[in-house]
Length: 160
Image 1 (cartoon, rainbow, N blue to C red):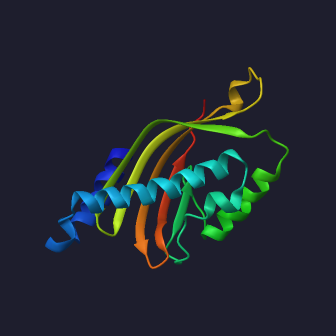
Image 2 (tube, one colour):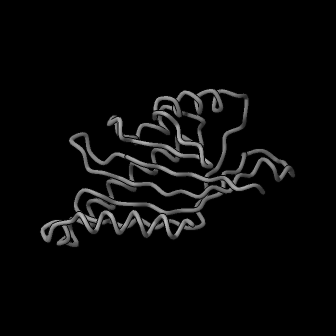
């Protein structure tokens, strides 16, 4: 299912590209990679520090931006931000986000996609395996006037 979704997204983006968009220089690819990785790392640090505003700062303000978690499509990024702010405000310990896989693909000069898997672990001594969350990410980035922003994120947290 995940690979089918990724194929469809990539196919749609490639089908809409012009010849000019396909030609990316290595310098441009490196610049895009550095920009997106910097923003992604800032968002991940915000997640680790239970900062909902920082975690959601990477999202576009465009109404087409969407966030899906475990088959729930939030009505807006603001709705998701508010729900996560409540979750982050609980008296929970800070967490460590560690990636088992991370793949950034630049589709054209204005579009990129991240597919990744990670583990979010509380930074306390605990033998409670339920506190450890495995997370799958698919993140679509778009170049906007404000810089690179997420226009679609899908996360899944399978039962452990």
